[in-house]
Amino acid sequence: MKNILVINCGSSSLKYQLFAVEESTKQFNVIAKGNAERIGQANSFVKHSHDGEKQKIEEFFPTHKEVLDKIISLLGDVKVDAVGHRVVHGGEDFASSVKITDSVLESIDKNTPLAPLHNPANILGIEASKKALSNAEQVAVFDTAFHQTMPCENYLYAVPQEWYKEHKVRRYGFHGTSHLYVSKRAAKMLNKDEKDLNIVTLHLGSGASVTAIRNGVSIDTSMGMTPMSGVVMSTRTGTKE
Image (cartoon, rainbow, N blue to C red):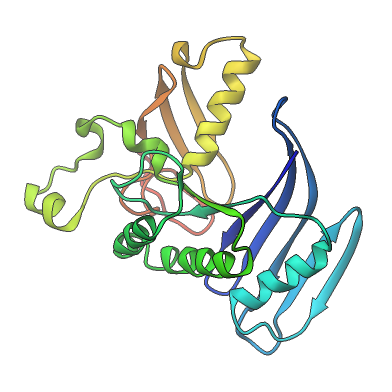
């Protein structure tokens, strides 16, 4: 049995869930979950749920490090074996989840211009987690990784090649973790091998996107270089592609 802490960091927030995973059966159960808001502000707080008990801790958390320290103390003697970090943008550097090394952190930082609001916050969470849970394995999971299988005719725009070569202007796609999971679940429910599956998956919520999957891999998706393209969303205009 391993305990895996999953973290989603914003610039002033942190959402988390702790899973107990049975390695032999791949079954998992949620042990604890919660969120922190207004990190760095006087009215910051942590909402925590553990074994059915809910509590709200209202105190000043100057950085993500103090939030993680508080979460670890709330978990008591539960050992965290690994931490999975949601990272928004991996650019063209990552086509799968990876163990976090110094070079991986450098690559995430290098892709910050493609996600200036998200990647810096993701890095904050990773660095805080490495300090607070130094013995736990750290893994980065990228929203963009699943879409790295798209052919160039589907990810390139009709703009000068220099824009792509020098400024990385291309379609990247997002919500990749959701589309990957949905495709795997669909394959299981249809009793098919993932490689034999040709489907369209939908990620529906405040943010939304559509992905075409052929033989188990993404070949096209509605979101472009920025999340403004694609279907209409709650706070994004979309383009009705």
